[in-house]
Image 1 (cartoon, one colour):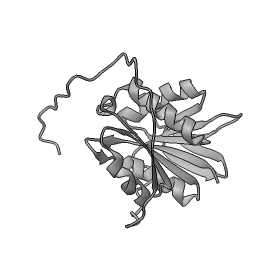
Image 2 (cartoon, helix red, strand yellow):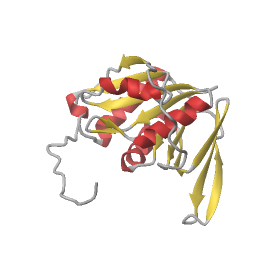
Image 3 (cartoon, rainbow, N blue to C red):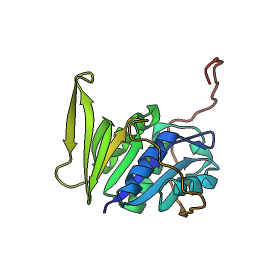
Image 4 (cartoon, helix red, strand yellow):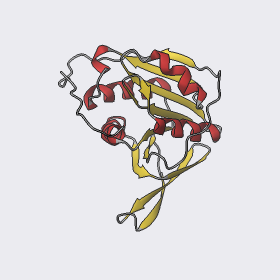
Length: 196
């Protein structure tokens, strides 16, 4: 059984389905599954993570985390990694996940596999499959050596488990040093689109 930390992505207070896939896969394998939610006013989302398999939820809340910036979210995720000491860190291979995890992997000296389509847990080991050569072949990825194993997994590649109604998790607030940030989102302007 491994200790797994899943970065749970949210936008405007709504959790992303791709994160549920990762929580479910980790829980199904019998891992000690931790979730980290980063944002502003997101503590109320902890029980939703629990219903998809999180045993413990770590929440980083601050006005500076309301909108995603690599710099601020990386500090929060590194703080979660230091608090949890996981063997494995997972995130969805979304624009946010593929921007954030390489930065964090460099900061914590972790090994990172990206754009994975399946994962298999064996104790504290993790084996992944990822497409190579423009999807013409699949590579099996296995981590060697010590250090944190990190991966981004394509959305819709594992499947979302059925939520377990009424399940709750221990929620812990993370303290994150956000002093001296060099980037800040001033405004988000949403475009008009006929797409849902």
